[in-house]
Image (cartoon, rainbow, N blue to C red; front, side, top):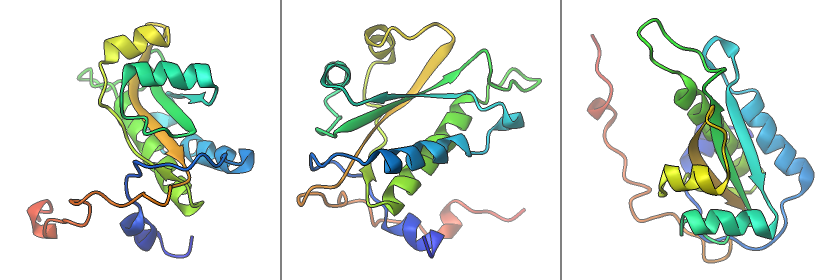
Length: 170
């Protein structure tokens, strides 16, 4: 990566994948991006399941139609027993897992691998299908793989609100 902002601007949600296998060293780098993600109090509550076998991928496809035939799907959770809790009870786990997901998406793109954040599923069904223990809270599925020739950014991808829309000086 030479320019982070350029990387962030070019990355888009990939919904068409080739079946080219992701090299293990590249998958390791993507997972390392989650490992080094900043988390509240550095508790590192993110838990990631790598779904690569046909059986595991079929389970994911029973939970959502949005796996887009990706050769690998990452199931990202956080451990409620480990995540940092604020004095008001706020659990930072979903934020910590989200930061890890974002870093994995950007590292994947830097390696030429596409991804798409998926939350289009019934969490209760996913938890049951994957037999997640009660301490794990699922956050998202992340299909990853090399973009196929049909892959294109969604029509609204380039639409950006003016910065004043979401940034206010106080």
